[in-house]
View (cartoon, rainbow, N blue to C red):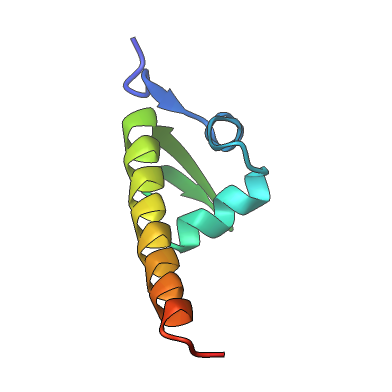
Length: 80
């Protein structure tokens, strides 16, 4: 059995999140957890755990909710 069982490839992780692989690359730069298997030249081979993806999405949703609440408070205060 491979030691990468239970891990998803880049395209699979992107499909799970409902985004393009290029967006997934941006998410990686923003801190999306991934496992680096190896590097060949400029290429980096990564795998993703579904649990990590789910936790990362939940964290982003919480941050988004916080920003939305701040914006709503700002608007209620009567600022233009």
